[in-house]
Image (cartoon, rainbow, N blue to C red; front, side):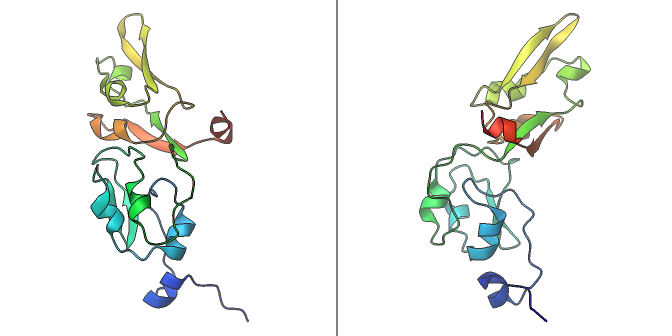
Length: 167
């Protein structure tokens, strides 16, 4: 009978069922965090936009607090091998605008487009109503700037497709 393999963190904490359910800082993966992160909190302290929070002992991004600027401070301060060696400028997810969007409900709002640093959210005109958002997934970095600003929470994150990642 074989025993399931445990990460160093799981072994030392005595927790065999530890998992990760948050949004990883840029350049990390859930597997890398579970395997090597010690939960020291240095990344949380150093994050200039204060979006990194330790959740269950792991760093997780909270885009309701702000956006990720891909500054690399979390990577620079981390003593463990959880970050990719090359610089990262996008997440494996993108923003998506739901039907709850005010503009789609005939109420003028362009908040998300105004804060998008990549200008991935543009507004196209339509007859008889306010401009509607048009999100370019190839341009979206997944930074989360649009999430907190939306007054009705109509933006969510969805996985980036393979086609978009190759663009």
